[in-house]
Picture 1 (tube, one colour):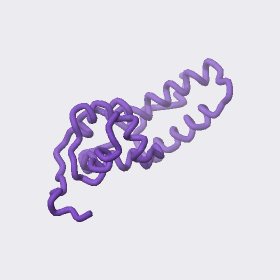
Picture 2 (cartoon, rainbow, N blue to C red; picture 1 turned 30 degrees about the vertical axis):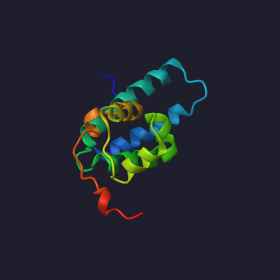
Picture 3 (cartoon, rainbow, N blue to C red; picture 1 turned 90 degrees about the horizontal axis):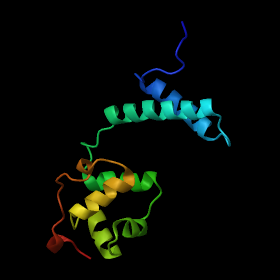
Picture 4 (tube, rainbow, N blue to C red; picture 1 turned 90 degrees about the vertical axis):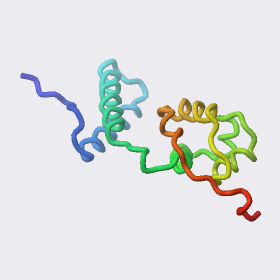
Length: 133
């Protein structure tokens, strides 16, 4: 009986090990068919773990967005392009002065490959009248 090289991820240690293995495989200049299959399998296992263990419910949509921006090394000017809105509106969104529109939620979800629900949750806005400039 053949022993499986990879199994369903059941621990953070196993997850980290598989992530390192995937990273090493993706660094191969010309992967073989077997390596491509291995990349595909590892990607599926890692994405399944991520989906089950990543919770955005603790973050409001703007905190999530700023975290994603940091992770992807994006600046507010990049959001101008991604969302197709002005830099003033992006600034207001990032400073909790303006809420995300439905269209912005759709674009963010598509860009970051997340569900729209991650960005479509209530969060408190700062009262513009009480904000000093």
